[in-house]
Amino acid sequence: MKKVDRFKSYMKNSEQLFSCPICAASMVVDDNHIVCKQNHSFDIAKKGYINMMTQPVHTKYDKDLFEARYQFIQHGVYKPLHDKISELIGQRQSVIDLGCGEGSHLAKITELVNHDMIRAGLDIAKEGVMTASKYHLDAIWCVGDLAQVPFKDSSFDVVLNILSPANYGEFKRLLSDDGFVIKVFPNSGYLKELREAFYNNEEYSNEETKKRFKESLCDIQEERLTYQAPISAELVPFLLKMTPLTWNLNERVDLELKEVTVDVDILVGRGG
Image 1 (cartoon, helix red, strand yellow):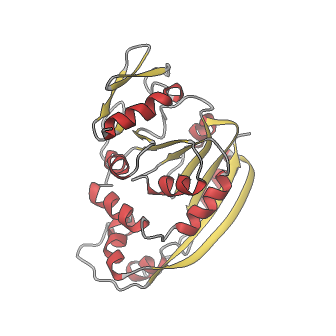
Image 2 (cartoon, rainbow, N blue to C red):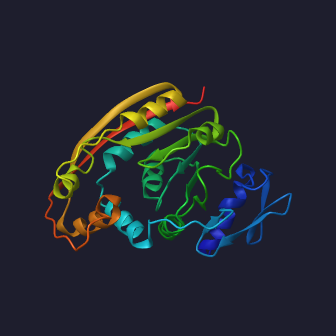
């Protein structure tokens, strides 16, 4: 089966979840499109994703960045984080990763969960979603706006938001009655090796962003996860390419690293 046909089949099985981003009507998969009752239609791309933006958006996150991020994540640097999130998800039946980028976190986490579940990933960066569809099958990959997520109320048991901007109104709208949000915040030591190399170890605090999470959701659980992950020399160029921390560097950098620090806060909250 061609990739696009497999994607259309996956979308068709989950079409009851979609909501038109223009009028909020229900939608159905019809040949090479998904269309609502008001005839607002969005094309299904041959590469296996759907673009549901109502107007084009250009971001600084390009194809090379997402390709580098994919290659870096494949080497297990984030495995302890993926293990922890998969444990939190447990036997839940549906998950959406908002700000999914190239889809690697969602793919790794749901692989560890190891049971059939509805998987969806959304990002405003088309290049990220295209990379996700290139490498990861059997998920709904969607280019969309975090301010207007094209899925119905109460559609997902778990909303993931990993090292990405948040929209808590939409997060809560999407949650099923017993659903919850898992958000991963970078902590002060996250990729500190890059901060030390390029920013004189400039201090970083996530307290304000965590405060907004706690004000927006209830039944909060919080856990800090910190570890050093070994990396080989071949991964360093991918690391330098995949993060906005290096965007302002004006010239090519040769950096020798044998490990990087992953230091994050994992917060879980319910909609109330």
